[in-house]
Each structure stands twice: as C-alpha cells, then as structure tokens.
Length: 329
Image 1 (tube, rainbow, N blue to C red):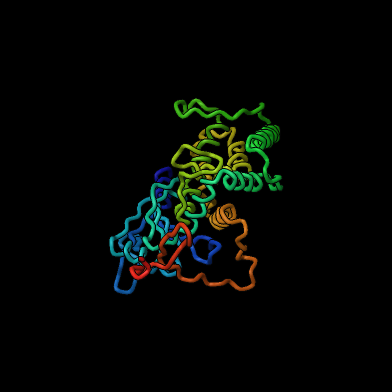
Image 2: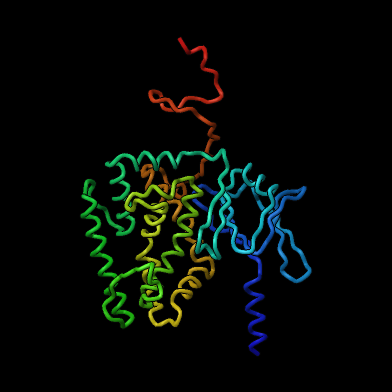
C-alpha cells in the first residue's frame, strides 16, 4: 500500500509542467517550465517532455509572445533555443519549484533600459526616493500618505500596523502574543510562526526578483531597504506581507513542519505566479505614477520600437547610428 502511494507521489513530482502564466500589463506572457528540455527545431523552439515512459511530447512555444520564460527544476535548454529567445526579446530566468527561488536571469541585449533609468533617477534623488518610499507605504496601507511625511514617521506607522495585525491573527488562532524574531544563525530555533514566516518571505523573494529582472531593474537599488544586493526585492515583497505571508504563517502555527508547509502552500496552483501581473503593475506605478493603467484603456496601444540612443548632458538622448563628425567645429 505504502509502496503504491510512494510511486504515485514520485510520478506526480516527476510530471512535467508547462504553464502559461497570467498576462502582464504589457499584454505579453510569462511561461513556467519544469522537468523538460527546451530545444530548437526547424519549426521553432519547443519543450520536450516525457509524460509517459518512452513517449516524448514536443510542445512548441510562442516565442514572439513571451515576455519571460521561467525555468524550474529538471529543465535544460540548448544554446540554439536560448539564442532564439534572446532574439525575440524574452528574458530567461532560472527559478526554484513554483517560484520559491530566483537563481539568476539572462536578458536580451536589446532590452530597453527605460525602467532601469527611472529606477536610478528616483534612487539617486533623495526627494524622488522618498516619494517612491511613500508610494510603497501607500500600497501597503491602502491609504494616502501626505507628501513630505518623514520616513521615520512612515516606519512608525508600519510598526503599529504590523503589531495590530500580529495581535489580531494571534487572537484568531488562539496563540499567545507574537513577536517577530529572525536569527539566520539559529534558523531551527524559531517558533513555528516565525519559522513559517521566514520561509514564506524567502519564497516570495523569488517571484519579486523574477519581476525585477524581467523589467530590467536593479535588485540592489531599493527605496526603503538598502545595503544589500536584494534591497529592491525586499521592498517589493514587503508590499504583500500583510496580505499573503503573515496570515499564512499564523495558519501554520500548529504544523509539525511549518517551514516546508509554507513553501508547499505557496507552490500549490502557482499561487505565487498568479500575482505576477499585479507585481509588474505595482513596480511600474512606483517608478512612474503618471503611467496609465493599460487594463483600463479601451484599446491597448502597441509600444513603438525603441532604438539604441546616445546620452547627451544637454539634449538628453540623441539618435544612435549617426555620424556626428560634421557637428565638430
């Protein structure tokens, strides 16, 4: 009996996945693949899977419509397939199962730097950086914060809100008063709620990192967090903490293995990946609050092709591919 159950479990874990994830705000799609070989054929890029022993199945990928391909465990990709994805402007990211990790990303060389430039301009200007931080807190609290509010005041409001949330969830689950504590040097010494919260937060970092890489931003340049290579990742994950990771952690207070249960719950049904469109839109709004929400537009406008430009301190950007020798006096 147990042998049959173990065999079923192994087959389920070994079954390949090709999941076209929710569309992002620019109308392009994310594709998650695991336990497959991505290769180039004469007719295009395809994912080769083996749903049944000895039976290979090829699924052709819509490379022209893919914004990002996420390669999960058990996936390999050939150089020719990777070259094709790069030519079509598709970001390729190596992730953990269900998005609980982000190990690295490869971006097309012709990808626009629009969002990276917006991020750097906002990060390097103290006033603009404070404005982005304020918008982050507005997203978390779902209420307006007066422009110019000191950052220490916003941190104080955050602390009060999180204490109130911890208190309410502890009462709901019949627990004693909760205090957040995290010691990476004593991971197993955490209580079940803290252990589940640490694991769930680490899982959410993966999907936030994937979105940041897809948009071409720098994970290191955060607006609330700073000093780490994943500062912006922490900023983005915190936006959804009260909504996702904290309630999940408290629900696992009596779990015999809260750490693995938290990761498994977030992997189920691509729960993390379903938030991709929202995370993309939120990050774009944070960096460009005047940007229209394309989902509310009656007709989606096609973005023009953006060619390489040259930077000029007085004129901004000037056309590339031009000989300016005649301009020299």
